[in-house]
Length: 381
Ligand SMILES: [Mg+2]
Image (cartoon, rainbow, N blue to C red; front, side, top):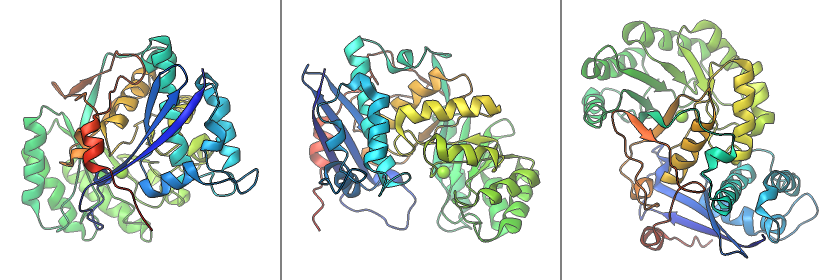
């Protein structure tokens, strides 16, 4: 089998809010065609315009090529060799960030091809499943106005109505003033009761104030019991993670902006984190998610896959979570964006707080062509 074409579908809502940490406002879907008529689908959760350039750029020299020059003509079953060749071919402009984002989308699509070619769901190609269904947590944002406790109550009630047993709030106005932070989480706790798990994502707000962040984390945790504090500082501030980890009683997690098993080794060992959150559509695709999962398992911590975009990430994460014993939770973005829900024909509904692992060959997704046509945006410079 041979890859004959790579299509980069660049999608965007008509209006994008630049001050909102909502990754479902645009999307980059990558589709790979083969000479046997099997098509694979992946997503690169990054700037779609940049992804298009990373895939289609001309050759500059041996360590600087658009990724299509590596992938076209290759056998999808050589997925790891292709990954390593893409890494080398983008080494000058890659190693972290955009190049690894685009590689992630291509890698995901290659795994989808392999599953379809063998008639097996991806989790089986990864060694088989540890679970048929996965506990999901509703993932949403704090209000921009840190005094808006009614927003917290509304999001909490929605999560209860939808059957979730856990919810994460992130970004927005959190982390500005300690009393507001305690009140925000307290409003959610009041609605949700004592058993519901509440995660807090600080969105790197304490990059320049580790001690202040530790005090706030401990204050919120002591008052309202939080399941974890996420991304308190920049991913590069690995020593900051260690300081949080040593000073906070709750779990300290992060990694949605870390890349490959090379980056995660330092993040885990020096950062002393209590869980890692690589994003399959950013951190290195299914190939490196598996390596990161193994690293985490060997160090005795969970893999909590990140995902805040389309159903393609939901599907890929379900396979990865199924295939890894130390992956107990699915992030389930509840933003209203049509790109969040309508890029695939499949729905992945939450029932009794859990989502079923797909059983169809490959990732188990079908692209909704109407959604692609409706939101297709050809970015011109
Ligand atoms: Mg996050």
